[in-house]
Image (tube, rainbow, N blue to C red):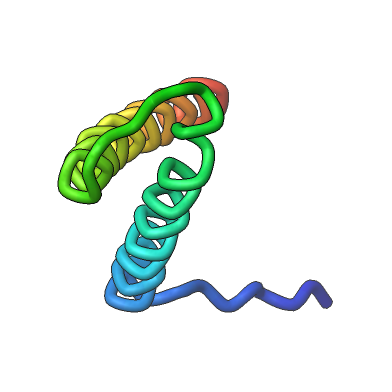
Length: 79
């Protein structure tokens, strides 16, 4: 007999996604603060935070779009 895998609730999935984005955002900002000066880019903390916000928005849009494309392919493949 095959065991059915437990799935996450939508609420749990949302919480996990938000925590993932928040942690990723602060890691990215910290990396920018360290890496940018190595390439001669010297910007303020505020600018680093703003760049982080922009890149996070781009990342979320990319992730969502790819998830929808793969879901479409999966559904289309089942027909």
